[in-house]
Each structure stands twice: as C-alpha cells, then as structure tokens.
Length: 266
Ligand code: ATR
Image (cartoon, rainbow, N blue to C red; front, top):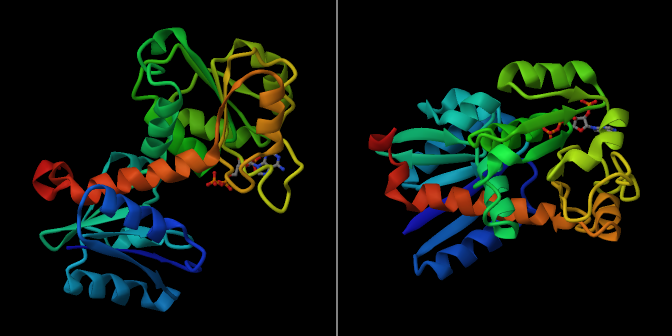
C-alpha cells in the first residue's frame, strides 16, 4: 500500500491525485494520494505525521519547495543544484529530497523526439529565461554533451549567474536571441510569459525559427500559448507544457515505487 501526498498551500486545484491514482492503477499497485493543505507553522508536524503514518513519500509545492529542505536527511543531485525539492521519498525513516522537474522535462522531450539525446554533439539548444525552471531543465539536459546551450534572459545578470553555476555556451539578450533563432534545434520557453491571465503575451516572436525546430513551452495554462501558436504557423515540432507536468509526476512515481531510489542506493 503506497501512501502518498502533496504538501503546499494552496493544494486544492492540484491534478496530482488524478495523475497518481491513474499511475497506481496502470501499474496494478494499491495506494492513495492525498492533498495535505499545510500552513507554514504546521510544515514540520505534517512531515512528522506522514513519517509516523508510514507514507512512502510526498510531493512538495509552493511555497515549501525550499523550506522543506531543512527537514530532509539527504538531497539527490538535481535537488541540490536547484536548491529546491518537489519530491520526497521516505525510506527506513529517512527523508530523501529530489527534484523531478528537469528529469520530467527530458522524459517529455523524448516522447516527442525519442533520439534527441543520441546525437547531442550535433545539436544546439536555446533557453529563454534564467529562473528556477531554466536551471532544472538545463542541469538535466547538460548530462548529455550538446554542441551548444545558450541562454537568453530579460535580466542579463541572472543569465550570467546561471552560466556561472552550470557552464553554458553564450548569453544573449532576448532581442539577440530572436534574430539567432535559426541556429537552434530546440528552443525552450522557461519563462512565465504567456501564462493565464497574460494569455496573449509571447517572450519573443519566432519569425527566424527554422521549420522542424522543436519549440517547447513550460507554460501549461493555457495549453496553446501564443508562443506555441506562433511555432505551429512556422511548421515547428511542438512540445506542450502539460507534457512536462505529466512526466515530472511520472518521475516522482518511479522514485516512490522503484527500489532503485532507496537509501542504500545513494
Ligand atoms: P521559475 O522558478 O518558475 O523559473 P522565476 O525564477 O521567477 O520562476 O523565473 C521567471 C523567469 O521568467 C525569469 O527568467 C524572468 O526573467 P527575469 O529574470 O528578467 O525577471 C522571466 N520573465 C517573467 N516575466 C517576464 C517578462 N514579462 N518578460 C521577459 N521575461 C520574463
């Protein structure tokens, strides 16, 4: 019996229970995923309660992705790099923190383009945005030896700081990136531009993008952002934000149900 949950505030609109109940059913596993609305002062107590109740693990959402770290015993690589945790596994009474955003992104990319990582040396990637989402995605993609990974951000200092942490190729302004679009195989919007209620906005226009380029948006509400509508008009391949959302949940599910992620494997 897998007892799973989500701590955060608010949690009532989360799609996670539906996704995880479906995954449990698909894998013929018994379990339950519950929403645990948590006030700041109750964070420690709620974590202790889940431990006592024998939870297998839980997800963490806003505003606790950083704060939860002080309650954990171990941090896996990408959670450490990002300084942010969205998945916790409880194993032998110890809490292990993971961040599945980057791993989920790469899984979603591979559903669209299964061989994308295979000739990484020949491929160039452009990240639009330099916040937490960009860091998780870049860190995971950099496990493969891409020819080039560039970052463009409105605030250049933030792009420089991402470069210092991860080692990227070039730092561009958004305006420069717009003109250089023709040289990339994958263009990822990691900014929040275009998210409801700012539906009509687009981080940069895609006039110079090559047909066939994979254009990806991490915004999932709305599904069809202006960025992706523009990409479709230019005959690009589209990777939707909802795919990343789904696969970061799949990755968390794997962590909870696969012994490969237990303490003795760390
Ligand atoms: P997350 O953790 O979800 O990535 P974040 O750290 O707040 O969120 O990062 C948001 C990203 O969206 C940043 O790259 C931000 O650019 P700045 O660093 O210049 O602020 C980008 N962003 C948000 N609104 C934007 C806008 N209107 N135009 C361009 N970029 C924007």
